[in-house]
Length: 437
Image (cartoon, rainbow, N blue to C red):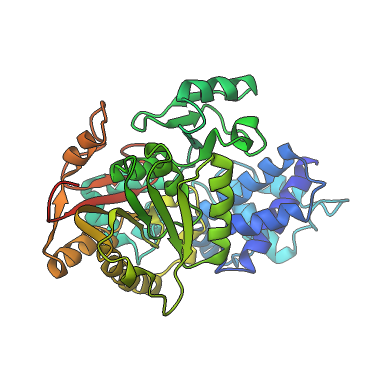
């Protein structure tokens, strides 16, 4: 593809994202490129990276376009990005919209006026705080409560791009074997600083076609997510419930720490997610796990009350900790979503807590940095269920056999891109009274 054709494809991808505001952008992109198989790997990366850069800076680009009396159309959003983030001159932007062959049609007179009115820099002191920080107003109080005076640095880190982390499947081999296997395919990696199973790619490369991935030696999983599975401390012979399993990333990790001995039940409310989980479990060589669909009226949880040594709740949340990876979630999620999710999290925790046996542990996690989804939920559960107590992070970390210091201090694990370089995660370990786990 020519450079101008790549710009046109990025605009087409942005149009697809705009037309489906409640659907995750990565799913839209998968469909977009599947329908355009003629776009090669290098062109696909260039197109998606530029489109995601626009999505990532959408709040700031909207502000500039509003000042220039322009609508936030995909064409003008990309033009504004080229000027404000990539340093293009207005005349070069106009030339790129040539209308030739696969290029975008020429700018209209109205679009030209807007382009000529856009003035760098991208960040301006007269921007509202939420635009300056790139944090929607509904999330700003929670971010401020979490990060305090470090909010600007935390916000800037959330606007960056995420690394690609892998978890080595210990059922298939060691971290050293996985590094060597990936290196043989031209993919360089470094060990992650906290997770003993983690590898971070030196440069972003396609992984799903590698032999190491196809044979189940590695899985794509952010280091922070790996640490949640580590804190669950699932051991051989235990009975474990992954209550919001999704595609079973943490189920896979816990199966490895259990060495395929004991039993894990991966639960979810989605048939497609559980189908994907079953496929991943087979590829990874996991044979101590089963899936269970949590359907309305299901009595599964009542029949198994008090039977599990470990119950992991990776609760549905706003995903504020994953904005580097899912930048569209900034504008796809709102105050009403937060309110509904907080209520849902509380209900899920109440049901999951009943599954924990005396002396067993409940691990509550989110990929959110908002205290109302994190510490506040733990406090509410402890009020309702005083038989549970918090296991401090340092204690849970040491009991999981970690040699390196824990990634933070205090009762809970709270991760952020600006602090540990992972996605933003929260994790609390709670133990039910009644004896050793």
